[in-house]
Image (cartoon, rainbow, N blue to C red; front, top):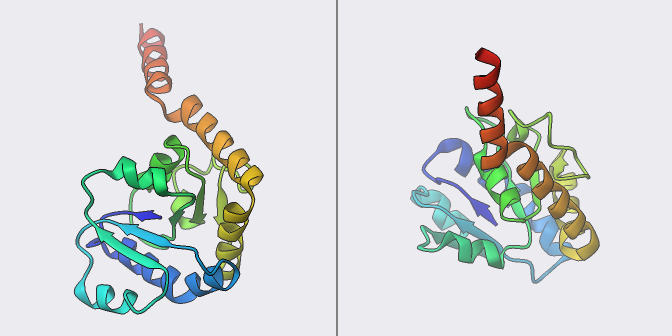
Length: 174
């Protein structure tokens, strides 16, 4: 599954790269795989192009994002440009969904995200496909990555972690 604002160039551009260079390699190994794309604003030319590919459901805006996450076995973040952090990575991790991401998508989180431990960071198109297939085929690896990712969220990105950090700052300034 991919979640993002699809009118934002880095999102639809990265997803287009994924669909045209990676998705077919996933389908060759898992013919019944489905890529669910969630987000509004996709330019019409991409919508028309992506509909030609097998196994892709372009959902657009959804009323209940949590319901979509429940159906998701792997979240992908094929982002290769843009500014800011890819909060979609932390969102998926916090909802106990394993992620396969581009190196670029880890910006701002490099200290805590470890390839093969709590996330899969793809080096290239073939690696991206292989890591998705691994997570879809191996429930043990899927569970391991998911639990380790959730631990990172609890330790560093939860409300409690933020509160503790804030209180430490206040105490240190007194």
